[in-house]
Image 1 (cartoon, rainbow, N blue to C red):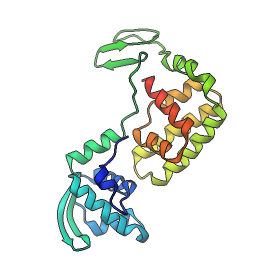
Image 2: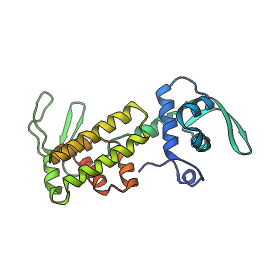
Image 3: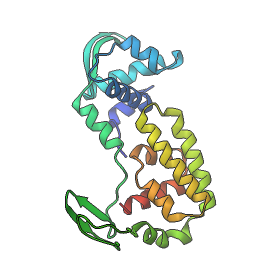
Image 4: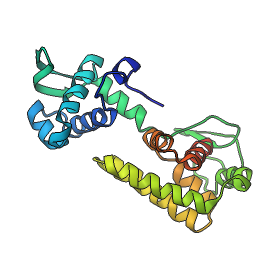
Length: 226
C-alpha cells in the first residue's frame, strides 16, 4: 500500500483522502495556478476545512505540491500559485497503477517483444489468439471463492469508493468494479478476474480498509493474471 508517510499520517486531523483529492484536482487543472481559498471552497465542505489545511501543509512538507505560502502560529494561513510537483504526479501514477503481483503465469508485452509465462492461443507481432491466464487463475481459486458473496462485497466496495471519486480516472475504476460485480452475479469467475486485474491500488487499499476481505483477496489474485 502506498502511503504519504508515517510522520504525516500520525498528525491529528490528517486525512489522506483529502490529500489525494487535492493532488488530483491540481493534476486535472495543471498548469493553471491555484489559490488555497478557491481550492478549499471547491474541494471540501465547511466542516472539513481545518482538515483541508492540515492536508495542504502535509503535501507541501512532502514536496508533492508547491506554492507561495503564508504561515501562522496555527499553521498554514494562505497559499497562492499552488500546483502539483513532479513528485506529486509520480505519487498519483504509482497509486493508480494496476495491482500486479509476480507469478509464474501471464503474458508481458514490451513493444514488439512478447514474453509469455502461461497458455496462449498465438504468439507474434501480428498474431491473434485467446490468452487463457484468467481461466487458469480462476480454476486454482474457484473452490475458495463464493461468487455470490464476492458480488455483494464488490457492491459495498463500489459504493464506498464512489464517496471519494472525483476524477475521470476514478470513474473508470468504478466501471471496472461494476463489470466485476456483474460477472460475479453471472457466475463468470474468469471475467471477474479480468475486470479486477486493471483496478488501481486505491481500490485494493479501500477494500482492505473497509474489511471486504474476499474482494481484496480476489483483486490480488487478479493481479497475478496480468
